[in-house]
Image 1 (cartoon, each protein chain N blue to C red):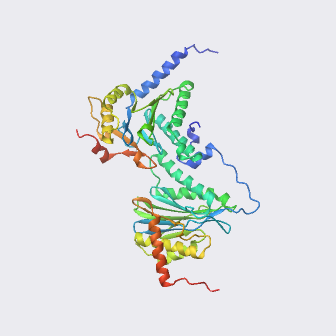
Image 2 (cartoon, rainbow over the protein chains, first blue to last red):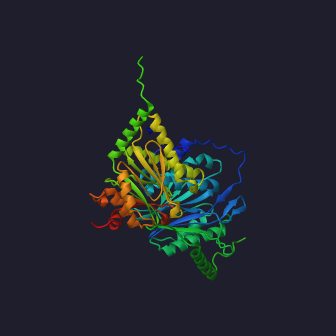
Image 3 (tube, rainbow over the protein chains, first blue to last red):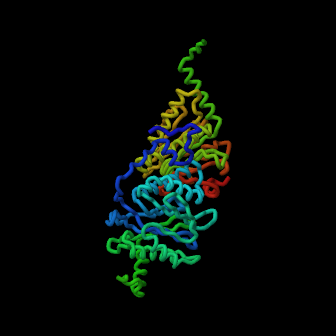
Length: 268
Length: 227
């Protein structure tokens, strides 16, 4: 591998995606004759609370009606003070996360300073937009982006659509197949200034209800010990909540719901 | 049509080397020292924003002396080389030796084929799993690579600084000890260097994935001896 050196007029600057394009031009995607059966990741939610943001995602990946993976992770640190959560076609989504993490680090190293949270959110929007040709063929990726804005001292959330549209949400957001159920629970439970404890419980309750009503969303697996990935992003940075803590919260949630006998059987 | 005069290749190379050395000698030097938790790099640099020491990858750092625009171009090329390699293969496949070779190839190529050699001397450091695996590569303007252990000095005054560091160095120094050895060697017997004249960074084994960390402001003042 030789050193990538460019003339001043052709220099890709701090953008890793542009650098990749210079080094190895990508080929156009083949057009599928019929819809492919591919692996999909499902429900993720994000909630703003007093000290920052909570992000949570279930672990199930599906191929059509089959569960293809029980331990997929959908919530990742993007850098020290931000996180990305994904729903949609799993392959391209993982690739997008990898590229996004790399882009933020690459920018930081080349420029010698970190991108602003706004700048990171716009970068992700551009990546989703560049992915549009693949999305048109059924490989849509819809991420959530959340972070702690060190300049404004507040947690912020961003939602995207397949065209790269970027929408900042004030309080909470959800995406993926179970987002309607999870989002409704979070919407009803949200109030200004939630504590970390309350925000974590609310996110997990949202995921529980999504798993209860959406076949593509996985609930907590107490037998195998598989729990949703939950993380907080605050002034101290991105921190993943340990599985033992998530288990304890789910056990509490199950006890409460068993006591109230909520959400009985659906009318047939 | 005029014919160029014949100049012996020895003379051409010597002229180029003299030119490059003169350019490098105009700037201040930098030194890297192994310590118990990794590698410390200290450079004499009065600018707080134009860095001589920077992060290349998880466990790799770069230091350059000489002409700023030239070594900064090399630094960015190094970041790109490392990030592309890590993206194509895996993060653990990125190593200092391959990067040092790429730098050497490029500097050698420029030294023999271009009008003007690069007036730079650079250092590529990689912190390993234990101090036996720490690596220092010293690369000169003509593409020669030297693999050094214990410490490495780059810049016009490297020989004198290296001698002073040789006297002060001990294996297994702590962070403060390594910093003081490097700074007093850079300063020499007749001067003292204040925190504002220094740029200091470490590749620390205990820092997690990204080992590079700058030592600035209060932390630097505290580690330096009070004068």
